[in-house]
Amino acid sequence: MDKFQYGFTRFGFMSICIGSIALVCLISRFSTSFFDYSLQKFEFSFPETELRRNVYTAGEENRVVDSRDIVSQQILSIRSSNSTKKLSRRKMVEQGLVKARASIHKAATNRNTTVFINDLPNPEIYRNPSALHRSYLEMEKRFKVYVYEEGEPPLVHDGPCKSVYAVEGRFIMEMEKRKTNQFRTYDPDQAHVYFLPFSVAWLVRYLYQGNFDAKPLRTFASDYIRLISTNHPFWNQSSGADHFMLACHDWGPLTSQANKDLFNNSIRVLCNANSSEGFNTKKDVTLPEIKLYGGEVDPQLRLSKTLMASPRPYLAFFAGGVHGPVRPILLNHWKQRDPDMPVYEYLPKHLNYYDFMRSSKFCFCPSGYEVASPRVIEAIYSECIPVILSVNFVLPFSDVLRWETFSVQVNVSDIPRLKEILTSISDEKYEWLKSNLRYVRRHFELNDPPKRFDAYHLTLHSIWLRRLNLKLP
Ligand SMILES: *[C@@H]1O[C@H](CO)[C@@H](O)[C@H](O)[C@H]1NC(C)=O
Ligand SMILES: *[C@@H]1O[C@H](CO)[C@@H](O)[C@H](O)[C@H]1NC(C)=O
Ligand SMILES: *[C@@H]1O[C@H](CO)[C@@H](O)[C@H](O)[C@H]1NC(C)=O
Ligand SMILES: *[C@@H]1O[C@H](CO)[C@@H](O)[C@H](O)[C@H]1NC(C)=O
Ligand SMILES: *[C@@H]1O[C@H](CO)[C@@H](O)[C@H](O)[C@H]1NC(C)=O
Ligand SMILES: *[C@@H]1O[C@H](CO)[C@@H](O)[C@H](O)[C@H]1NC(C)=O
Image 1 (spheres, rainbow, N blue to C red):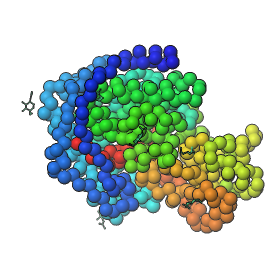
Image 2: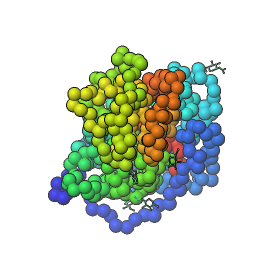
Image 3: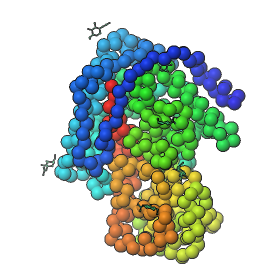
Image 4: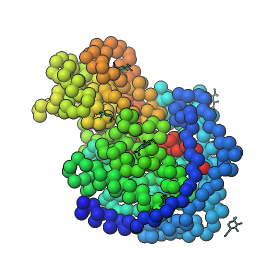
């Protein structure tokens, strides 16, 4: 515990005031999910009465932000000079959202592909390409994220940028960028969402005691929320609903249990999106688990002619450890059973994992200890159709992508019939799935700097959609 307490002293956590102010928050989510583009009948009413009833409850004048930061200080002085202006700024944020909703709503029924075809050249892979395109443009135009400045690296404002949890560090670093990040605002009154920039992977690295106890991580998250909710009025105003945390580490969900509102209200952006562990598609976001080697995609998975080699000699491939609920079933039935379907527990040293992926038509992607697996993305990069074998896994970007156009989902109970199921897929269907994979790849890539419609931006877009779905006082 010593290391942990030391961490807190450095953070300068204050003693917590006793006594609380009762804040009535009238927060609700739209009954029909805004981001479910398959729906044509969005219904978001912003009744006048509701708007008038919910007066902005300005808390104490905000003392926080970071005194090291000149920009923040300027904002602070502007902010404290006139609270009437503050009220109207807040109102403008909500009114901007009303306009965005209306324009997306309108686009949702538009069948004219010329509007979006340049940005989204293969409309088939999206639930509603026109609505996605419009809401992406609205995001580029309006979306502002306030990043809390409390805390110090490495636990906060930092994260891993390579290996399996790379997406966690890459997202945090990108959000933290001061000059080039168009989505960051230093004025919390103009923000749509508030980011809690701690890294669960680094909490595990620096606070975890090696005893399978996630308590130090929860204590940290809970203290962090106490700090920002004492220093700023925003957390209390929405009970955390317009705040988000992000974690690719398996223990993201466990860490989010630190605070009831963080778990139940906030937008949790998680690789480990297990819907039977409280992952709620209405408010939470699946983060794609993208494995990077030294910060880059493995050279073997970069686009190359070899990827196009066809026909592929193997029907399907898997190699990996036996853990979690699904893999034992797969290995029991198929481990080294069929020469068409190489299935290994651990791949013998002389064989190359990515060679197999690039020589197979389908790649099995069973859940391991957790629902998410970097395999899904590696399969996409290898143009090997992912065969999703998992229970309760909410697939990344399934709010906008039609996974059935570039992957195959097989019920775990049908694992014994896997070969039959895959051989029954016609050549035409296979070629269609494969060509769609080529289009979808860019949505699962991390770029430095980020590119439009890549994994970073689509993650941000998923957060934007959750915020659009939220009606705040
Ligand atoms: C705040 O701004 C409003 C409108 O711009 C103005 O009427 C009011 O006098 C200002 N109040 C203070 C304390 O500056
Ligand atoms: C589709 O949109 C384009 C660009 O906005 C426009 O020029 C064209 O007339 C539209 N086509 C139809 C059939 O409405
Ligand atoms: C938010 O609520 C907590 C607990 O009720 C309270 O301790 C804190 O002072 C409040 N924050 C603000 C800025 O009022
Ligand atoms: C979330 O809310 C439910 C129902 O109110 C509650 O039972 C549960 O404990 C909450 N979750 C957490 C982690 O606090
Ligand atoms: C998903 O959560 C449920 C409930 O906690 C658990 O039983 C299951 O094993 C989890 N799935 C995976 C793959 O970890
Ligand atoms: C998957 O299998 C389970 C158990 O046999 C069954 O209850 C469920 O309906 C199946 N789901 C689908 C989508 O076929």
